[in-house]
Structure formats: structure tokens, C-alpha cells
Amino acid sequence: MDHYYTSEPSVKHETRVVEVHARATALELKTDSGVFSKKGLDYGTRLLIETVRLPEAGTIVDLGCGYGPVAGVLLRVYPKTRWVLLDVNRRAVQLAQANLGGFEQRCETHVSDGFAAVPALVADAVLLNPPIRAGKAVVYRLFAEARDHLKPGGELWIVIQKKQGAASARSTLEALFSRVELCEKSGGYHVYRSVTSF
Image 1 (cartoon, rainbow, N blue to C red):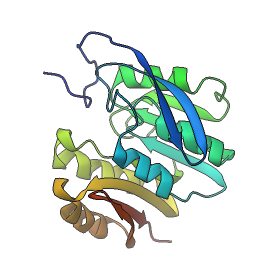
Image 2 (cartoon, one colour):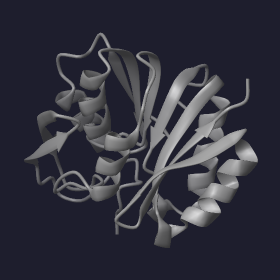
Image 3 (cartoon, rainbow, N blue to C red):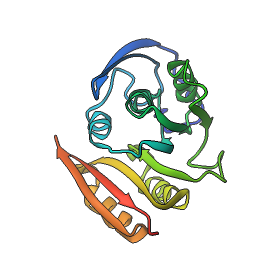
Image 4 (spheres, rainbow, N blue to C red):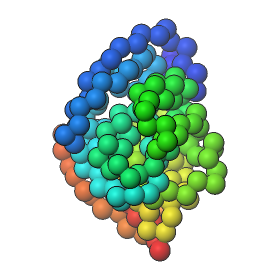
């Protein structure tokens, strides 16, 4: 059976439009079967959107972008930022492209396992709701790839459920980054900000 961390979902299309409300922004976004949280914005992603604090300008990576709710909200909150959206799931990337229509000059999308499609990219921040179903090896590889693609002092923001391994994720982040901070806890979810060394 497919899950969302699949490059080519085989499940039948079932498109719908969902409403996303976060950071004083309201959006209508198209979703489909075979993508993460197809019925609407999940609690963890909403908490990440509400918690994250980004530089006013710079390059931001939405890693595992899904159908684009994170970038969809935050590129409006931070109008001078440039966005790179990455997802292994081709269907999700196609949806993100459609949902971010009108912002083509400020964002680019790639079907990509981690940063494979953008090996030279250097970012100011990376945002990630990790694909827990893909397993810890994949999740921790994404943490390491994010670090390797951040500029000095760059930040990785993640959201993870306590019961899905928040403590071990934090330990892994602390081994990779110079500083790790718990920025928010709510509903069993933790939001961590990890900073690269200068």
C-alpha cells in the first residue's frame, strides 16, 4: 500500500479543495489522494507555521512540501523571501505548483528525495514536518542534509510528535547542530529550532 513518502503514488486521484487558516492568512488549496494530510492542514504543520520565525529576506526551503500549505502561508507573511519546495512525491509537487500559482518568481518546486535535485543549494532556513512513516533512517538523513545545505547560522525548524520520537530526534539534532531549542509544545507536538555553527 502507498503512503505519502512515495515518488509515484498509485492510488486513484481524489482531488478536493481545503481551506487553510494560519498566521492571519486564509487560503484555498487543492489536495489529492496519495499526499500527506489530504483532508486539510494537520495540527503539527499548523503549529510549525504558527511558531516559526524566519529572516525577512533570504532563501527558505520547504522540505517535504506536500501540496504547499507551509510556503503558501509563509511566503505571504515574509514577502521578501524566496522559496524552494522539495518533495519526493510527484503528485504533491504538482499540487504545490498549482497552489502557488502567481508566485513563480519567488518560488521553485522540485521532485526530489531530500536535496538530490538541488545539490548546490545554500539556504537561510529549512522547514520540515518529517515523514515519520518512512522510518528514522530517512528522517535523520533529512536532518543531516538540511544541515549540509544551510549557510553558517542557518536554521532547521521541525515539528514532531512526542510519541513519535521527539526525544531521539532532539538527540540526533544536537549531534548535528551547534544549538537546538524547543520553541513550542502543544497537543503532543514539539517544534525545534536547530542552528548551524558560524
